[in-house]
Amino acid sequence: MRNSIGLAAMLLMVACAEPPKLTKTRAEMSQRERDSVIGASRLPGAGVVRKGMSMSDAQTTRAAMLDSLAGEN
Image (tube, rainbow, N blue to C red; front, side, top):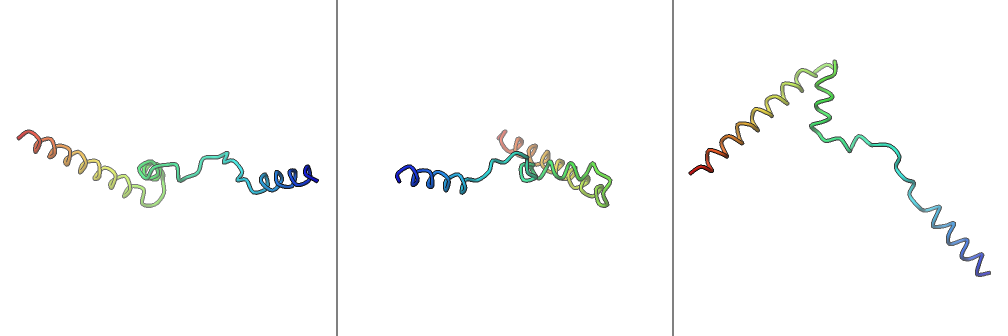
């Protein structure tokens, strides 16, 4: 009787366990990586994505330059 209850409990735990994830999901890519893939493709609007990324990079560079200038005082 005890063996039956133990076996039933073990089977219940195994049945409720989450299966392991074997593949990478899209959520593991950063937004920058996704935008880069889209920008490199031939999809309509890919040029706009590339331009947006270059503008973002320029603004990040400008902000870093201004921060370094402000820190020199």
